[in-house]
Image (cartoon, rainbow, N blue to C red; front, side, top):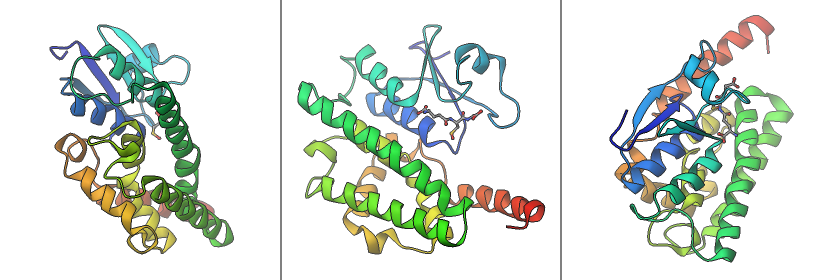
Length: 226
Ligand code: GS8
């Protein structure tokens, strides 16, 4: 275990896991990383620490598990209040807004993004339209700021959205669209986030994700023909 008594159970392509490792890195908290085979062979530790959902990510701090990525981010910020930058604003109203946007991101991005490669034809077109529209909403929300909320450093909203970034390559490839064209300022924000070592080292390789997804698609087409 790390000096801080912190273990993270993760699965490498996961956006939900990446935001936890990014948050710990941004705050300078040392942790032990344990890779889980979530779709094949879940470890006893995962089943024991997340008996309800049996999903990663799980943060284990001094032997106590915390589950669900957005709850883990709040926990990290509160448990290590005096370490590194705050991920949540201190003002109650600004905190409510940060929660609003992180909820919006997860409600919109995961499902539409997934449908750009699991569906075909009209359903894929609809997914692509929804995803691009959501990116445009986020671009308007960013405005002229460097990071969301007008902060100098990254906040929970930046981490929630950038955690999906490695998947954008796959969604654009299957969907046949370009975020550089559709939301150029938002892509500028993504590049800015990637200059931060805590972020870039925590995110999976977009090419590896596309390879994995393409394999899953080929297997699906072989068995089901669509
Ligand atoms: C989602 C975690 C999740 O879907 C969060 O932490 O924010 N709302 C949760 N984890 C997936 C891997 S990433 O797609 C998982 O562990 N799946 C295993 C399973 O479904 O059995």
